[in-house]
Length: 118
Image 1: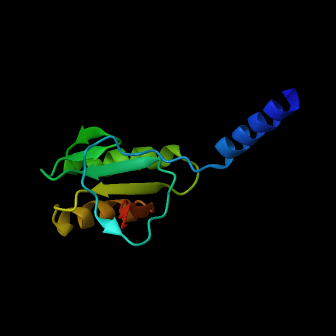
Image 2 (image 1 turned 180 degrees about the horizontal axis):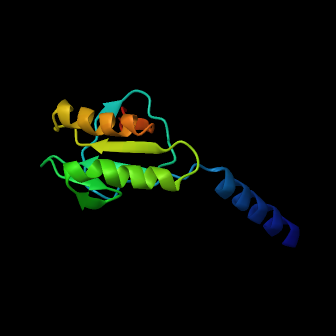
Image 3 (image 1 turned 120 degrees about the vertical axis):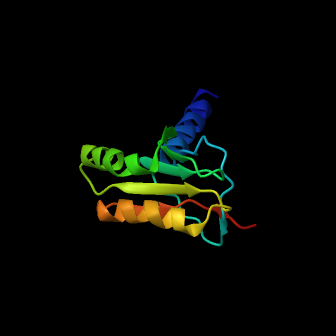
């Protein structure tokens, strides 16, 4: 019986190490749905709520402060930065484009967070 518990423990450790780690956004945002939803390891998160408030890594920020703060966060990482946009589906597209343009000007890869369709 002792060897059986060892095998179960090793399988548990194996599955824990090989599973995908997802860091969900803590802000209440109604994300748009998509047929394909890839999991991206999120380092930098920009959230736009339905009342047009901006958050950088869950901290409130003004729109004109996003570029310098984002540049500082991107310079801390050694590889190319990945910015994940959590945008409420009721937000006009122009706000999404502004933030995505700022991130692209800083040579960051931009990913839009979605929920998979069922």
